[in-house]
Image 1 (cartoon, rainbow, N blue to C red):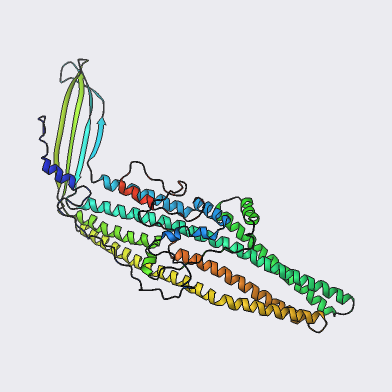
Image 2 (cartoon, rainbow, N blue to C red; image 1 turned 120 degrees about the horizontal axis):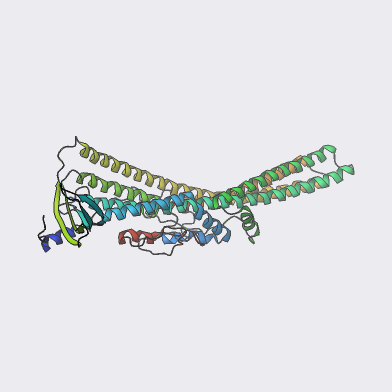
Length: 520
């Protein structure tokens, strides 16, 4: 078009074009419309739940019942470690970066649906003679350029849909990374407290061995005990000391592990572990809970399952993106460029040019590339769907495993306590016989080992019980907010909402959960 005034688009046509933005293609929307499929799970859990009638249900379609689960430990030391580890975790940082990348992709996809507008300016000084006296020509053009691809067949709408699903998936993966870190730290902390409890048992056992050896030496010097008995008693003390030192070294290694996970100074870690009143050698004690009897309802709150399902939705949308490339593409472009100019120092004058018009691109021949890209997108969708189903099966297995562990511990603990009581009674009786000269030191040491093994077995079962509760927390989804819930999140721990971003981008930032009583 030339310098005549441009003929404006009719209001009805303009309204039709604008209505196509963000609502599918102007003519049609190619590609499959994704529908969330029901989770491929059984109707009920197969493993029994301990004390099913006496415990509160963890979540009845409301995952917020688990979001503050760590508070139920009522252990400030654990909370401090969880908060510190979450701040420095590389997996959480990587997941946070992926959210930012997905958010940028969504902004770009939304922007592709709208006209692009650019400002351009330049300055030119040139000389021309045309066979006569040269003249100087100064030009200062400035103007606006605009382009707009009309989404005829929904390719841009599908791209926005894919970007939106990607952002949801990345956000869910961020939750999963945080829960994984929480579980790792909680297990490391549990391991240290378990190690402390073992040291406590071994110290008591070593003190008992030492006292027996002292009495044997006194009796041996008085001629009431054979030298072999005295030697056996001293060997028992040495064995007890060796086992105690070995266990203490294991506790030191556990401290090193906590330092690495939390990035706290070792002196601070030791201070937190040793100066907390009443927590030394005490295993964490989380509150018991039941999970809902419907597997699908439980698994819906798992962030890894949610991320895998959103990956399927993204792959579905990308089929439409590739299919739209096989259809014609229509775009509008235009510019208006006023130019301030003069010649040989004369007065400046303004020249104005503009242009506007459509461009239609028709794909004719590409040797089958576009069709192959569609087929690749379909295969990727099938792979994402297969991965989602595999993730669901793994999630079911993890829940069932945790329930089996809990049920097994509940059944074994009473038997272990009974064994400790019986072995201790036997040890005291055998020790009393030996002290009166009617028993054998070998029998005493055998009875002592039985007591030690039984006490260690009880403590191991108690540790396994706490570990199983942590595993069930992890398997049931950990920290996860219900849709639409808004929570204030520490900026250092979570991706900050982007200023000026679209509403679709920011709405997912309100789903960022907390997993600990301290700042996360």
